[in-house]
Image 1 (cartoon, chains in turn red, cyan):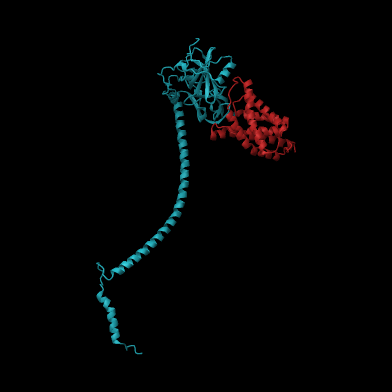
Image 2 (image 1 turned 180 degrees about the vertical axis):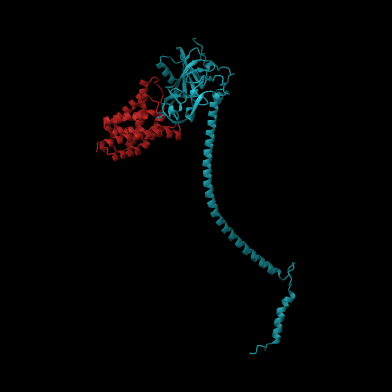
Length: 178
Length: 339
């Protein structure tokens, strides 16, 4: 019973944090900086879930994450969900090939995930959306990726702290569950 | 020794010596020139006194300056702090003044337009840089419904996309999913405005025979029942016509800059208002006076030379080629060729 409670609390906290990060990007950052691209910290949370959880659990949490993120964008829900799935699976595969415990790795994977997310969304839009083709704002993608990469290491520390607090497993240097 | 045994002669000499100055000195304090034998002494005394006086006044001055400096320093830091507070208050007051001006404008528009509108504040934007939507602080509870028009005093902003209880998501007209039925104000040519990127839209499905020129104002047609008729959307900045095809397309710059939105109006009841006659070429009751200066357009200005139709860029040519149309590159021929 206690384990289930901790498990549910862990998921709830992660989703709440994703909600706060998305609100920060869409509202607080917008009020302060206008239309200058903000850090997509919710993508960092997505990456953390993908690389530190088992496959089935991470997919279920990603579905919930897409519900959380959906009100923040006018993107089609299906495209958002598919993009999040593809990104999550890609992050998991990437982690199996390349993984080391350091802030540099976190910055690398989170920054590239932001660009990957936009790229996936764009490519899916070309093939699926009715008004499919558009030229995206690559400069905005890059700025978002840089800001996200810079702010991801402290966010990862927070997420690891939440995991430790709620007795979730952590990874060692070899990427195995401790 | 006998006290009374004294020398009379010595006593007399002493008395004379004592009495002599009293006999010669002036006992009255009468103003007048000093005696000649006193002048050098007076000069010396005066010089000495002057020296002492300047010395002490220097010391007194330095001491008082030092004491004053301490006080000045305290006053200075107090005044600096007060200055900063006043500057902050001034900044806030300026902001309030600007806000007041904006609200006055909105209220004036609300009262004069004849429509039922609800003012709303923009609270957030889309998290994706490739999608253009905003969130406003009004929802179902305030009477908002899906597809209600969202405007400002200057022109069209978009429409309500996802209304919720207390907030609503508004799709901006620059989003590629947005579509607004429109007409060219001068020629009444009808088309569909669709979003393209953050600063431009496309007016599509114009008939090939329609007379459309750069600088023409595009307004709402009112046919969808969403927007009031004749409300400004944007101005045409380029026209593209393919070599073969039955339609033409124009690129328009929206009147309202979506990057500067702070307050908007949601039209809950347009009241069948027609803004066609209220728009001057730039001096009407509503509409954009600034753009008319930029494009040099007014109601009495002759139409622009049609040879100024711009050729399709290679990027847009690629897009058109996907739909089966052939782009026209560097075609100087007039619009009516092939009609």
